[in-house]
Length: 523
Image 1 (cartoon, rainbow, N blue to C red):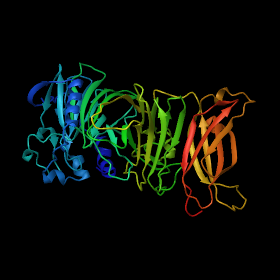
Image 2: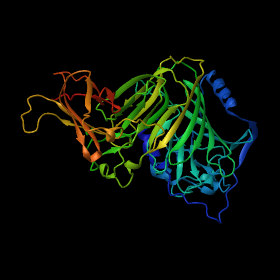
Image 3: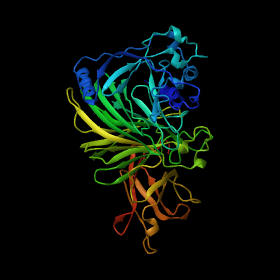
Image 4: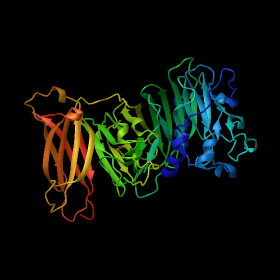
């Protein structure tokens, strides 16, 4: 699966707004179930995944119907699910499930099951569930066992807009109170950003545990398969102003995996205030996320602004028992984006919080060049230090938080903006190349600083020379601006790592800002 094609197909498909609500005169349709009921729980699913991992991999079947393969982005969007056929439609269970039709670049039929009182039965595909007008598809000619491509969740607070959707490989998205989709998560990442093809595990089946009446959450189980692994997943999903997904994952490798990515997050960054390489659009900034935040096992808070590099860029940040990490959209100012169609300032942040000690490893960040916003070019995940070998059982538990308000927060000042540009002193001739950095900090203990306390800059660089450093108040944000110029080594284009924070009286006042700068060739 190619991320560019996936995002083009799913950006609207996952949002899927504008579906007609069930009117009081419309009765919910009874979903047909096939096959005998089978005992089901998470232990059974883990056993299923372990058994699959012990056997040779069998790729899931793909659709063969030419008319479904020929669907375009627009015709796939026109192939709409009828709300009255939703699982639990009209039953006042708090949430209901609606399904995506297979086709276009989603060729893998996914099996869906309902779990009631510890027993699961498969939900049958029915062409009456979908509108086919304008798609070129005759639903009556499709096989009865076609299956589905994925599903979306509808909350009782709004019957027309979905709050979460699972579609394509192991990708899924969700929203917070802003009801705005943005970045994605995945079940697992394998060999992302390596000089060999990336492997995309697939959720091949889902089980929906029927919630009680007027429930505020629901439980979804998933079976994950790929040539290298099989896995069992449990999602306890609780909608809200910040949506919470409590995730348990049991991963069973078939083979050794060189780069395993746990709790992978996928986002888009084209251009922003710190990186204007692709600033060729009338909008000043275009991104779903503007930075990677990390809360390390030692308690340090780190902020790494995202970039759109010229070449693929990979960074690994070593840690032990991380407390959390996430791709954030901190900039919430409409004026900075000027996009009144997709509203980047409303895009959710996504925070990963481990539920137990994960041991040694690293948060890894992959930044891929992109020329436009239709390509998810940012990936972040946890990579365990321990080698992944066949026959293991790898257990990971974590929570995902979707929205603008995250559960964990530093009491130190945060980076609210990173700006870069040509260095030097205005009005004086520039006799050598330098690059200017301006980092704005706000919040934390700044309002409590006495008049005699002056924040200082703690700055280190892996190469080059730093000059023209300063820290001064920035009253517009009730914070401080740190500035410096970096003079790269002459004739050396090796990326330079920068690290900076503000301190006073020996105490850190801010989180740690880190950055990787690539000097230009022609300077």
